Image (cartoon, rainbow, N blue to C red):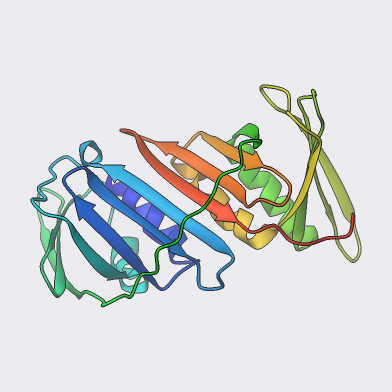
Length: 238
């Protein structure tokens, strides 16, 4: 699963500079705001996600995402990776069966604020092919800065639209089930484009929308692992 972990660090590198992670007997998890305090990011990786997981007590560590991304970007995903945490450093070993490479990375002291995100009971759920959504985000990003998502009560029609200085586009897609309510929400396309990069490791993307609530995007990853992104909606005059 190094490929998935590598992709996580690559995408997080576009959003944050440091990451507080928590380790306990159940697995690894993290949660934080992005650097602009517009998006909230949460990841859950149970112990079964790892081939070997040995954590005897609960510990929290701070990771330098930029350094990790540089190390992972020059390492083939076919390599075996072993990570060992100590109080002030992270030891990483890569093994391709012929050669071994060792890294020692300093850990960060991060003050973490507890933040709770409240989900709406009336979220409208959208399930899409993740590669299709990534392509849509790239097209919208070429035309403007805001994606508008519109759903219709008792209908499976979804309208994605953008209006830029010189052009306007509307893309209609059909959901697997009908929406609960009429809903229209605007979101920053730069963030959505970043979130959509996980299309390379997950076939489906789940999007939950409700007016006046954060947009919730999630991916189901192997072995019951999950990634969640909450994005503050943009205020727009409809």
